[in-house]
Image (cartoon, rainbow, N blue to C red):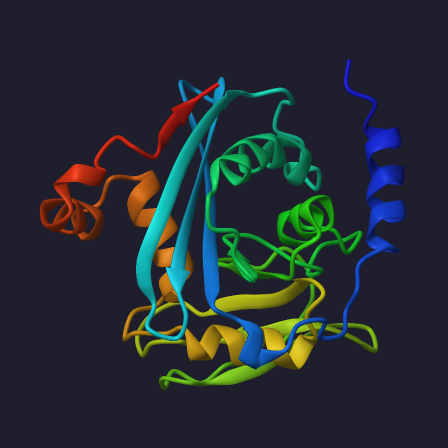
Length: 234
């Protein structure tokens, strides 16, 4: 049986360790990664993909996919405990460690201020940003339909992040700092990594690699020697 009370207490403790000021100089960022987590075999296997891009060119330079046996059932609010083992497995395979990581999920925009981006950032001690496709908590004012529409995501007097329509006629992104990044810089970094799509390039690449999308297939077509060299199962 899962001790959910202990896991929630651990979340609160770890959340108190999250750093919410900029702990990285913009000129020092040479590589930005995107991380995406999914599940296979009806949830029995957790799959994590990490894509490392050169910054500011946003050229893909390395990727890894790790699959691990899922160690925790789905429990609302405790998803990061279910996801981080596969993320750590993929991280350990990287030859080029990134200076900043975008995680497809929440940062501090979480009921106990510890989404997967914050949790993972603490575990590997790297600056992280949560780039989520849906809201988990917090409130925001009505958002315009135009490209670039922006509202703060707040809970009480606390700003958790931003709701940003990165592309017209698309659902907005929910951006929040994970660890060692401020609320304002989290938005700015995501905006710096856009290339005309809804998702920023780091997490768009991670999603494409994890799901073997056409974007990744085209890249493999140009780099056939790299196919299979970065896929791992433990």
